[in-house]
Length: 81
Image (tube, rainbow, N blue to C red; front, side):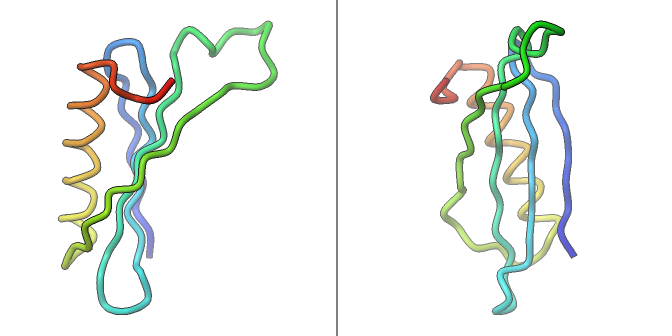
């Protein structure tokens, strides 16, 4: 079962995901979107997804790593957008 968390950090929305890799481990990723792109005038919102390369032992560990990664990169503006 996958897990999802939404964060609102600085100028970004961060969509964190943890999912079972099918081999007993868990993977994590974060999608970043600029808050300023979420307007009524826009129909396409660009985003950038970052995969965390580590494999984790549990969904909670993967989600914690995704949240930490999202908060750190959003605070520094290091999202690729």
